Length: 422
Image (cartoon, rainbow, N blue to C red; front, side):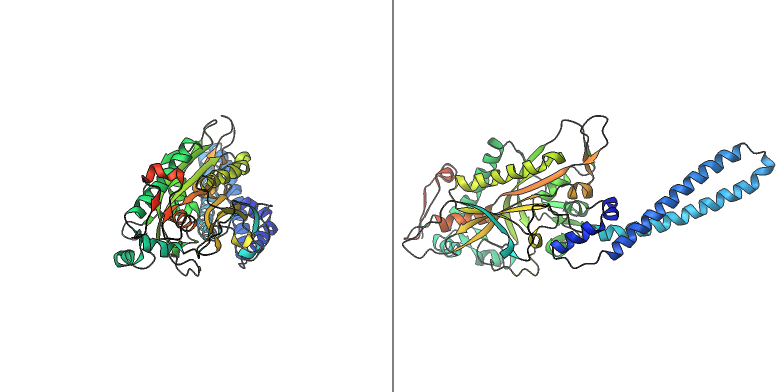
């Protein structure tokens, strides 16, 4: 959430941000409410001052001369009461406007209107050349008898996948491998949070009200299925002030993520690429603001390390303004090469949200014991999306006979080096 003072003092910067994000909304109503609130707060403070002086004056007056002063005080108190009611109404309307306003982008975020304008920064690994026509992972999965889309659909409907046999074991192996790497080599603390989260936590993370159509809502309890582990990890510290010396915090969590994908027009609708339920290992850090952009690069390297260990070719892309996530100031995407589809596919998103989520969640820190509490910066990264990692492995390590080689780092978890078709 942007601060009211910033919006009031820098309206052109906010308008420029909306333009950069290709957001056509007008700021006029928001700015009117901000100015209205500013005037009301000044008047309220003025009345408080008047009342303080009037109450001090009345104590020095003889009893017989206090009637007029009491009348004056009651008039001021009545005005104050009416002003508080008006201010509450403005605050409610303003809150709705603010919750729908995206974060400000970092100066390094490029201009752009679509994926075509995202900036490719580098590539790692060479896509393999096959002496046969490589198959898509959903075809391989059926032939290996490890992916069952029809079974998932019978249980829960379309875009749910059932993993069986070696497929279920491969998913578990990937989860364990990623968690072990991030905890043992990268210094993250493993968290296993609840799958259900409160409305206030989703709102703090920037998921609500913006993405209300994408989340699964349990109406009876007013709880929501977690759309990404970033949400409960942020919720862990709502309304917290960190004392000096306690930051940074590094968390890694595996959860199943749930997304309705309402209105999704993605071309990636088959196999493991866009499901309503999928597993993801999420990296999350809470840091002091001056450290956040260095930490962003570190988290990118942590996500890359998983792909390199699995020897999966990928590229790093800096998202343009139009593709920037709602809560992010800057985002890198890691896109893994999918030989069966002859394209790169997103497998991780690495974002610095600066103070945007912290303001919504009221998470602050003190640099010194006497310092004023300031919002922290929060960062998140997929480390990685497990289903998409499995898809990339199947397509990259497939053989002409339909078998799939298991990468060396996963063999201790799998107990085998090869998956054979039935």
